[in-house]
Length: 206
Image 1 (cartoon, rainbow, N blue to C red):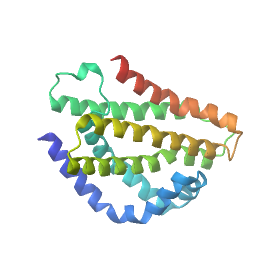
Image 2 (image 1 turned 45 degrees about the vertical axis):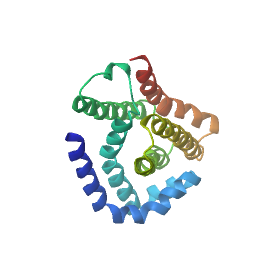
Image 3 (image 1 turned 135 degrees about the vertical axis):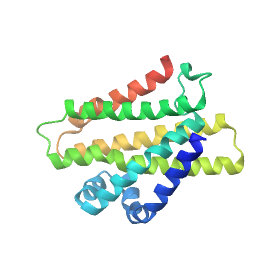
């Protein structure tokens, strides 16, 4: 029941933001192709606000898809009722966001221009919107084709890895506009790989 209510709520929110999505979609696609586009998007107040609003609206759909296909599945979830498990997915998501924010605060490069750093950090918002929309599309296709949950989950996890890899490349490109590629890679390790590594390891060891 809770799942259905949240699904309806998220559908209505996304529907209200559909015009913004249409307006910003070309810029989001460009962010996949080149890192510089994230700088251009961040320079536009309207586009960046629309992107931020869409990213916020995608939180509930992501948690619902992750719950439906068990994209995060530590062993201690076995046998738990659905509602507490769904709540845990939201908790894990916000814990991950908190950890990313903490890393961004701790390891902010002091010599890097603020505009460049913000564009690099908020590039995750753009990729997040794309990621959730693709997951939703995949879920719809899998539902129509009656694909079993196991193969569907595997396909979604591979998609997650692929888009995250592209995101890391684009974020490195943004950093490299103000520092060396090596320094950009080191920043990336601290800002991205630590929180994501903790998330992945937690799903394995627990």
